[in-house]
Image (tube, rainbow, N blue to C red):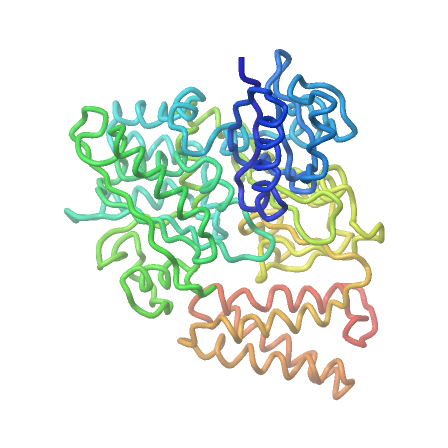
Length: 515
């Protein structure tokens, strides 16, 4: 009997040597004449322990990590393939606190299965949501999504059900489903993990979306820096087509849906839905005027659902377990769970899926283990490069769209980047303007010119030149950008700048005052 060993193929794990560990374990097993069956699974999201190798035992899967090629000989000496103790032994995988204390709904299969094994996917409830949806009318599918409280996980947090209802009601014979997979925010990798580690859940979600609104064509607009995801998605699409989950007469129904992957243009602005559509049409990625909304006139002028990867990947569990099952997680209007990505100066970085309501303090210390340097955490940026910087005094605020809005912050894509007390927040604020100046599409004046002028004003404040006057000017500039920009690129760039100014004035050479 072959011993089953799991070695991740996730690109984060590969970057840390997973492929080399795989080859070394394979070579050593042949040398020792030990029969093993290696499964290249996805990552569980414990990146500080990658490459993490698992072994199937009668008590469940046990883990070892982080493993490098020099550990392989000692692993075999201890007979790790039997689940034996070793200095890198982590115990039963599911009992590791990081995993045990999560609520994995969207990520239920991530790290467990071979990403391109449709048999693994079906065995763990895959396509149940689609099969249930095929029995319902489009209106009832949309109602189920609305009742679940699912909101966009890409940043804007717009109710998914309302968007789908708008497209469903739009009078057009041709409609599209577009997945925004141009994941470009700093400290984010949840989209990539779904696409690389559980691609069928995204495919299933997009098929259900097509069924719900009457669309027969879908596109995944994939970040150009994700070649691993592109390869896996295309392989999974081919398998789904072969198994009649895509194409004509899906599972014997009269519904058809086709899906393809398109590489993105490599521009941050193309993460904005209308710029994405322009790029998908083969044009330069520039923001469109709204109205009309993409739900009315989107791709090629037709009604289009544009949803983020996580939004679409969450649809299958809602259609499998029911709207109330999903809505029972979370708090207030923030229903369900959010994949939170811990990055920056932390001991333990990776992916945590939790119900809304958890605090930053719990995430940073219970999951993140505090700063990697051992120094106090001074600030965190939540929601990507356009998100506000939050000081320690706000670490107790629950992760909730409305609670964050009250303090002029955003949950965004769920990325959290931590900084210890050596960071200079005036430099971080200046970088926000630099980033905007580089990534702006240039269509509107507040974003195009405001970002450049912002750099100049921050430099004057730091140099001590007319500080009171320039602080006032910086705030006015931020107000103009927030209220005058065509999209969130310019409209949110002042968030990190003004938050840094408010909470860390001493880093700008200013006196600290109560805000």
